[in-house]
Picture 1 (spheres, rainbow, N blue to C red):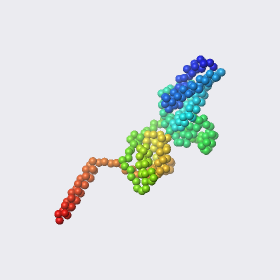
Picture 2: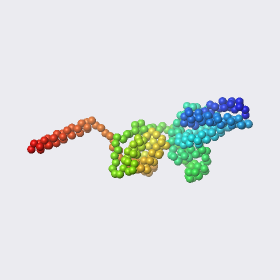
Picture 3: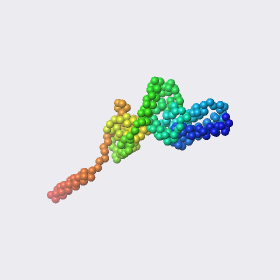
Length: 288
């Protein structure tokens, strides 16, 4: 194929290629980088091609191949979209629609368990087969298929569900003081572990009612991906205690800071009365 023909094809398909890049990316900057990589790979491929019978399919395969290489180089393991794998290339990729869909899918993938996210990533973005994933993860093939099936169902359900941010996500608590009884350990007292606001709110979130990772994340207005390491850290150091059903509770005691002007004035009044009694008794004893 000559240069003029290749350039005409690129001009024709550029909007769709960019739409594909938008759908697969986290930002416009990343979409432009991916689109540039695809065009850079597509142009010499067209020049070297003698005859192409299915142009849509040809360009689609190149887009998928370059995207796969791009993802592998970035290793953006968390929150990549798995949508679009079965969508024909000739579909019209709307930037606004794609952007909204990316946000929803990133959210729902982040709410999958770590094991399920690993399998989804390997299957959809590294193009690994079920037997290969089974061998690498040491999970039976049937279980791998089950995880893929459950992941798809969970995301479909999540896409139409309105997730609400809990109270702690809107107004997290803050500690005014820390205390402990016993040996604080080599790292110091509880302030070493709970000075981080997110750590503190994770522990407080399970203080009254045991909750699992997904429930904690939703209450705090974050995704499970963001707090998994923190939960593991807090559990390893005894601030979270795992219960049945993968729920967590805590033995940390929280005492809310309370303030009452009436109570404060009453306490001060009592102190003044006691001070007067002591003064009178002291003065009386000195006189005698």
